[in-house]
Amino acid sequence: MYPDRVVSGMRPTGAMHLGHYHGALTNWVKMQAEQPCLFFVADWHALTTHYDDPSVIERSTWDMLVDWLAAGIDPSQATLFVQSRVPEHAELHLLLSMATPLGWLERVPTYKDQIENLANKDLATYGFLGYPLLQAADVLIYRATQVPVGEDQVPHIEMMREIARRFNHLYGKEKGFEEKAQDAVKRLGSKRAKLYTELRTQFQRDGDDEALEQAKAMLDDAHSLSMIDRERLFGYLEGSRKLILVEPQAKLTASSKLPGLDGRKMSKSYGNAIALREDPAAVTRKIRTMPTDPARVRRTDAGDPARCPVWQFHQVYSDNATQEWAVKGCQSAGIGCIECKQPVIDAIIKEQEPMHERAQPYLDDPSLVRAIVADGNDAARKLAQETMRDVREAMGLSYS
Image (cartoon, rainbow, N blue to C red; front, top):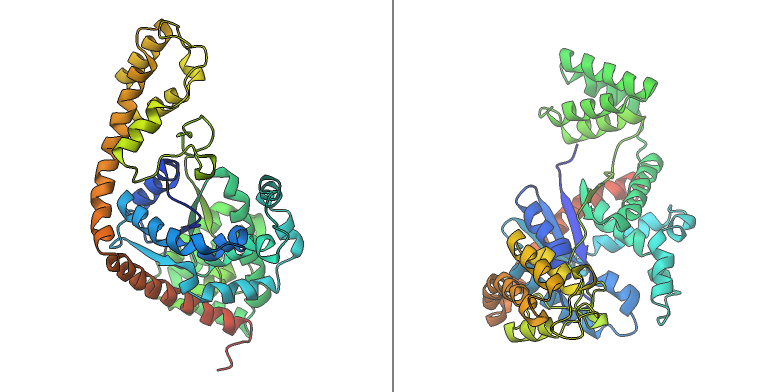
């Protein structure tokens, strides 16, 4: 019905580090070459936890955008924009909040988790409770078909799907819909009309999901149909309503295997991170001072790589031969910890060299980043306005 589209965003709450790169940005770089992608700075989301001190948000926004470009995000392939520069996000969030049950927000697993993990902050706010709904608006307003997430975020995508389904059920009604849908079936041509009717019956009578997907694929190929007829026929497949908002699918991404310097999750707040554009001297210092297997008190003591955070870096950065060398040398005390760390240092510095090169033009002339974002804001807002026209009309708010 609508073209495939990927949407994802990040909160600007601090410097990008190698955990972000291996956990998300490498996936973004891959996806941008495969289908249309919109990547946004979620500055309103940053306010859910930094509302009392928002000074970090603007600075982090521009730093993060430079990091994205340094990591290989290509503005000629992907649309980069800032959430707050597309006010339709807030409008859709407001309208969705009118019909979203409160219990849906309270049951999101990450809500209670973050309340516990951020106990030092006062998060008893509507903004924090409602952030999953704002997330839904961020995605649904672009009629995204895929959202790249880790497994812990899948419940958020499921809630987005429920919200879209509820909205379509409440507001996808149309006077004379059945007759208009049947007229649209006839415009498919006799052969396709017959197949569509058979597949619709198989799905509605027998719950045949394969028949549903086959019918959707057929409609995707029916290029002679108008958008409104296509919208009706997609809705007619599953019931008697138009599909105004698209139910996105979670695109599972592999979680980063790169830990922090101390073996915990890499985080700026833990002080265990390597920035995406770290100075080579700082990379060297940070890796050389990493803790290792506590059993290796002396150079001659044998160690166990499984107990050493450095080994986890080897698993990301070293080839098989180097990993074998590190394991053998550690277990036999044939190499010291500083010697073991050097290949990791070299690999990180090599990985970051093109990032420094890609970032430099934007550091020399910040107006280049602002121009990219201005274009992205305009492109994103055009798509958002198209959706909001349909949403307002469905809710009786178009006043045309």
